[in-house]
Image (cartoon, rainbow, N blue to C red; front, side):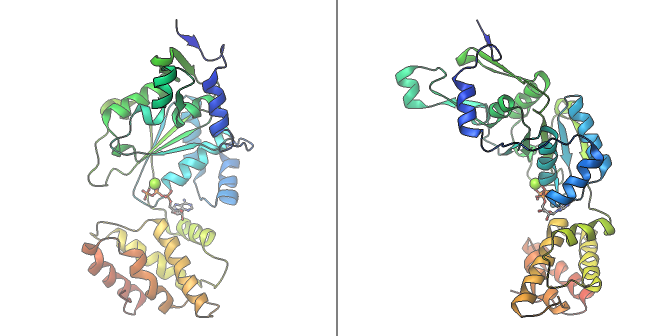
Length: 318
Ligand SMILES: Nc1ncnc2c1ncn2[C@@H]1O[C@H](COP(=O)(O)OP(=O)(O)OP(=O)(O)O)[C@@H](O)[C@H]1O
Ligand SMILES: [Mg+2]
């Protein structure tokens, strides 16, 4: 007979509390998109359009997983994580995918020595994050889903659909207890060397597309994330935004996201500070630019050309 988790508070639940309870510690849930946008900006330093938050919350209300797709450095992982946290009022679990991920790594496995001695039971069972999230009623961010196998994706969809996890060895069914258990997948469809997502997968998720932000939004992101000083003048900010814009429409393989704009600004500020300057100069921008913006040797020439065209000085090469 398979027992329902709600009736029997078994050892698995206690273990989950013991192992993961502190990590997910609570905060006040925020399920109003307008308020969430404000909290994301003020507390998480994330600029997210209220309509995107509304879309994600609507998916959660309908118990549908969300697939955030978009180019690198557009905030997919951080925003996915933060939105899950606001929704459930607890920190989500983050699972970075790889080809060899399977249910034992995310649902649970058995301690080999203990299982030999005591058998395959709750005592020898080690709960893993997906099961823990369901028991603790919090979210799960499954990062870079395209890097996982199709079997793994199907297993996750089944869990998301039925909101339950069966562990046959324990003869137990664990059911989601509240609405806090939600899944967000992230993916960069243009990334090379990744698996395609199946039709079945795409049919069942709510897809949310992230793009490079418009200039004003990106400026807000960089201001929010940059150091307080040295000062980035509007002129220097304009050079950063113009360079990344041009690189995004160039043919390079690794295009800069807002992650690179932020890092470029912070690195230039730090170099300026080390010089004892109160302001970021074009030279500071040029000194750090290739180190931040060139991610692949094949891109180096184009990136360096664009940097020198926009900044009007040669980029330093280190
Ligand atoms: N909307 C945003 N608000 C604030 N910061 C942002 C935003 N978008 C990107 N960033 C910056 O980009 C960094 C990286 O974001 P994140 O890792 O979530 O991007 P990603 O899309 O998951 O990238 P990747 O595809 O490389 O995994 C953040 O730490 C932040 O500096
Ligand atoms: Mg990411």
